[in-house]
Image (tube, rainbow, N blue to C red; front, side, top):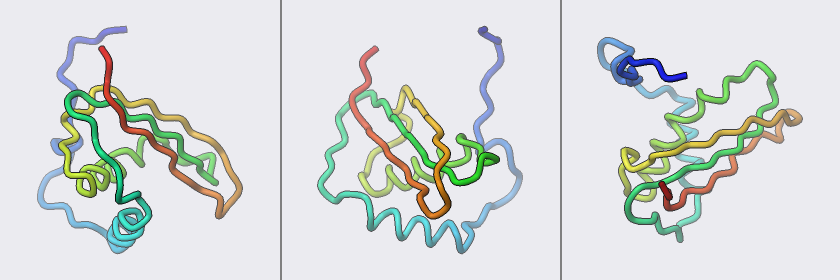
Length: 109
């Protein structure tokens, strides 16, 4: 169902300066080290597929997107404005078995 309203960016949702938490800084550091160094981002429009394993059924699958994508673009030096399609899947897993599986590839209209 198409609704004719301009989508609201997360950047327009909050007033004032936001600061990274200690948890975010640790996540960024660890994720950056775990991501492969040898990865080439395709030129042009991109598609991102993510499958995330959560140990809590209460976890919102969309909450992981912004920090994960921001870290990807910082590591691989691309602009996330080039992502035209995102597919996200949630899986429930045992505690301490959480994961993020991802693929970034050329988007085909």
